[in-house]
Image (cartoon, rainbow, N blue to C red):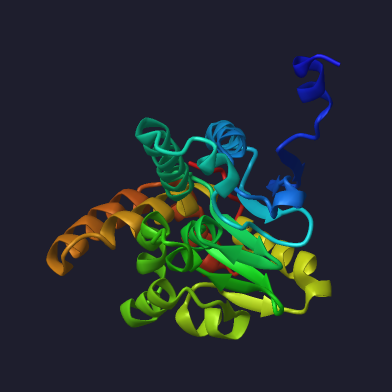
Length: 268
């Protein structure tokens, strides 16, 4: 069998299924605990780029196949290019672009976590807008244990988790369970494994019941204002609310509230 035929026979690195406005993306390298190889990151990036332009998708769920969510970067792939600075730079730039794309995606993104989420996998959870985890899931940034500080995962982690808790994870490399992940603010909910599918979809359905335009406006505003000083943040948010008030969906939502009826969103 040729190399090209062998590649064609391999399972896809990323699986996608859409149902009633929710796009579910499954990292599909179960034997490698869904480590983020350059190939998998490229597939996920391409899919997110498509979803960003697809108004039929109202929310995104990211999960992992097999025994865990994501074990971070593919260390074996990195070691095959030992000493190749340009390759390493390319990998981490690719990953950084992917994480930024999740933040700038118009649709809310929910991490659905089981097993482990470590290093760049923990970064992925921290980057998603919301996260639901099995109560048996574990999270960590263990790079320090192998001489490779989790510097890029630190960017997302330090924006999701208070400083002392983030530094404890980063400096010790120790794993935390779902209860501590909730306490730290890394995830929203921890549920029994058998209810993970149900509870994640339930959260997604609660989100997509809202105006898609309002969600887009709100998500963008959240991530922009959080980097501003207090006065600048209020000035920016005031302009966002003014623009939002002029939208048809805001008029419809307010009228529906006053008239005690369910709103009919138009996305404009």
